[in-house]
Length: 125
Image: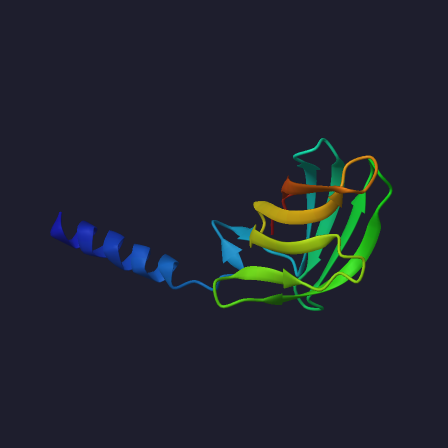
C-alpha cells in the first residue's frame, strides 16, 4: 500500500512538471481560436498567435476587424497595441477562455465592453 502511494505521488509530481504546451493529453497549438460575445451583445471570433504575438479579431455585429500586436505583462495579462483603439487589454487561459477589454463595441462602435470568448475547437493528438 505504501509503494502504491509513492508511485501515485511520483506520477503526480511528473505530471505537474510537464511542459505547459500540453495538459491532460490536449495539445495546445501556437494559434488558438475563440468564439465570443461582448457585454453589449456583439458576436466575435478571435485568434491568438502565440508565436507572432498577434491577436486577430472580427466583430460580426459592427464589422470591426483587425490584427493587432500584444505583449505579455508580468501578471500574464496582455497589453494590446491596437492602432484603432478598440482592443485594450486581455487575459487568456490558453485553450480554454479569453477575456478582452474593448472600447469600440456595440452597433455604432462607440461602447466600452468586456468580451468573453471560449475555445472554438479542441485539438487532440
